[in-house]
Length: 303
Image 1 (spheres, rainbow, N blue to C red):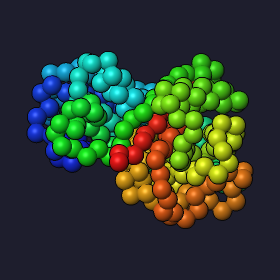
Image 2 (cartoon, helix red, strand yellow):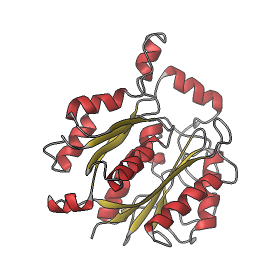
Image 3 (cartoon, rainbow, N blue to C red):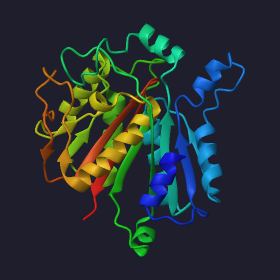
């Protein structure tokens, strides 16, 4: 709710009567559920209902849960709603508060928690650090935004999503799911290449190796590559919504943040090691989730 208020104020939105709402979460009210001994519902739709109660929209509403790809999937779905003419404005985003005893035990048992800190794309990486957070963005049809005199952070130019349908947690080792969504998002945008890539970059051995191999297959080796989970931790379903907000700021400021804790890169890709001013036009965002969820979201700067 706090993130929604900030987003509405930033977008100068005074009424939300005709807008849609898509808010996702991979954990919902898990802390309350654990504290109740399993009596209370896990309620993955609780964050969506909280935003609906706040803004009272008359457009379509939806709750999304797609593991760690939830935020990007919510943003991409809102983008489609606008394309399909369901509404001209959509409140999108995701929230997760996963630092609970059950989550910590589960991820520790799965061997995905870092022993010290998160090291995306480093040879010594051994897992992620759990984080909590929320991000909400206001999507708006181009004509509506320009009529209101709004200067957007960015345009969405392409989106694709799929599922590997491979295993309950592990992605396909060849990265074919991520490769397909990347190609689809690029095809929709009409761009043959992008200015930078915001990687999922969890710092786990399997995910980072898979993602680096797909990037090497599809892109020029000099494309700048960032990941912010070394600084911010991994907020699961909320992470890709937060990373989209960061990408919007990158496009507006032209400054690429460094990948924290990266000392020995796993490949010769162009990983950002320091904050780097650059002339950016586009950013491609990857998001991957347990169960083989894959998304690619392509943003273009507003000139």
